[in-house]
Structure formats: C-alpha cells, structure tokens
Amino acid sequence: MNRPVGRVTRGTTGSNRLRRFDRWITYLAEREIRSDASPLSVDLGFGSAPTTTAQWQRSLRRVNPASQVVGIEIDRDRVAAAAGIITAVHGGFEIPTDRRPLLIRAANVLRQYPLDEVTSAWHLMSSRLAPGGWLIDGTCDEQGRLAAMLSIDATGQPVWFTVSVRLADLHTPSQVAARLPKALIHDNIAGSGIHELLEAMDRNWAAAPRWGARQRWIHMARTVREQGWAVRDSQNRWRLGELTVAWEQVAPD
Image (cartoon, rainbow, N blue to C red; front, side, top):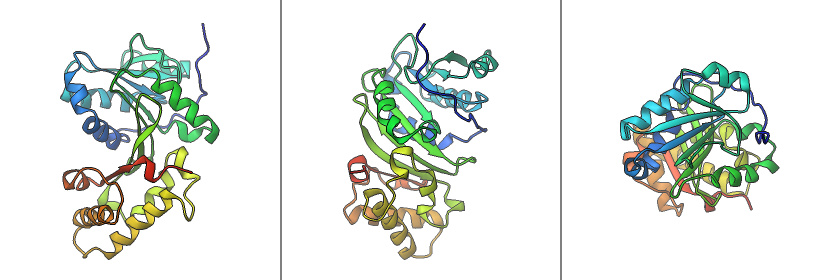
C-alpha cells in the first residue's frame, strides 16, 4: 500500500470554527451541489475530533440531502476515534476516496507546511476533483471569527481569494492578515498585491461614515471595487463580512 502524502499536523479544532468556510463553499458551489445525484465532499485533515466534519455534512445536506462527506486524516488514531461519528479514511493529499469528490476542504492544514510544498499539494488534491469541483485552502483563528480562503479549480490554480470576518469584533479589515493562507502570508509586504488590497480595505473602512459595522463593510467593499479591484458579488454577500477578489490581483509575483 502506498504511504499517504503529507504529515501529521496539530489537529486543533472546535465547534463552529469552520462555519465561514462552509457558508462560502455552499454559496460558491450551490448549483453543482444541487445538481449532483450524490455529491461527495472531502474534509482533509479533520483533526483531533470530527466535530467540524459532521457540521459540514449537516450544512451540505440542507442543500442536497444526498450529500456525503468523508473525513481524511493522516493520523491513524484520529481516524479510529472518528469511527461511528463520520466516515473517516486514513490518507493525505492523494485523496484516497473511491470516487472523485466535488469539494475538498483543507482548512488550517497547508498553513503548517513549508511554502515550497503548497503548489504541489494543490495540484495533487485538485487532480482528484470531479468536473466542476473546488478545492478550498484556507486558514482561520481558533474561534472562526477571522478567515481567509483560496478557491482552487480542478487545474490546481486559485481563482478567488476570500476574506470572511465577524464584523462585531472587527477593528480593521487587515486583522485578517495574521490568518492568510500559506501562499500569501509571506508575501504581505509593501508593494505586493495582497498588501495593497488590505491597505485599500483599511483605508476605505476608516473613511466610511460611522454607521454600524455591517454598513461600513458594505461601503468599504463597494468603494474598493470602484477603485479597480475585481470584487465579486454584491451586498448580499458583503453584509456577511465577506469580500472576494480575483486571485490574479493578489497572487505573488
């Protein structure tokens, strides 16, 4: 048997920590989830407890009751402990499922890897996706209040960069800088795309009328788009504390 690709990570988890991931994923792929007779999703590196895997499955089943989620872990003890709670499989980036998943969620996994291993992990995971599928690579804080995600298509290339924050706790949008995915966190320096985006968000947040946090975020998102950033969606998403831009505008040189 081939050895799983990857290494054991810290495995910290907690109830509702990944709810911002789940909300974005459902929105991004809702049409594909609904149209698939039995959509398969993979939670890679579910950690020391399968809590967020089970929560994700419940979330997906509200969209399509036939949704199935498989948790994959490289730590055999974690797989054994999850038995009977979720469908758990021993493995890694090779995604050892019997069919191609529509969705792969790799939350707080690649952040613990060296930068030079990230792209190869993206390509290996995305090569297992079903047509129209998505790999979500992202990081969040321990409470799930600050999250940053990359939406990667079946070619292994990021398409969207998404920030999702709890507005009630927010002082400045750039607080999310500490939770950038591995592919971006080392590039957050003056002159880079990600640094300029975060600066633009902070500047327009500070300049917004002193309404409530939700209205300020919506105003910030609209103004950032007017200033030339490829911001997708509208205030229906912005009001949730989300902002999504085209990867090409923040990708490292």
